[in-house]
Length: 205
Image (cartoon, rainbow, N blue to C red; front, side, top):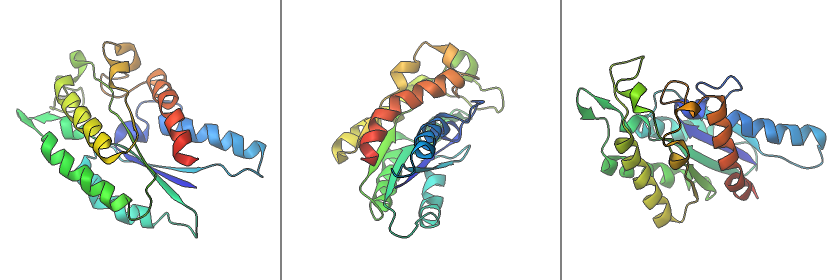
């Protein structure tokens, strides 16, 4: 099975010196594969792109998926997106929760053309003492905006019967898990990997 993991910079692995939570999952299954090649393990593709919102993900989703279709290998999808939808710039929210829901509905509709195996991974909370504004750009990330996106995702997944891994609460008031206030550090990425793995196992079964 090929598992395509779509998202933004946290999915890509910022700022984990071991590559991020997706890479940590891949390392686990790769280690199982090299121990026993008679048992097929999932092939995991990290398709996180720093800065992406749902709008950018939609623009690239079909092309990147079709490029990774291989013979009769089944596909599964993991989505972790929304942090950048929740950013504030010049006093304006980048995306309303309503527009975000329209986007993820389209993403899921496109994904279901390839597979019904879909998993959503939630957003971590941020440390507002370091994200209002962030150090690298004059934009703000606030927990109430992140939570609005996260809550919309949970309700959507419940309506669509799509499994969802909540991680927001695990990061609330835990700045020691964040490298820059927004992106998890090594410990934060390991926590996400640990939280995701049980649902990931069900996804690939």
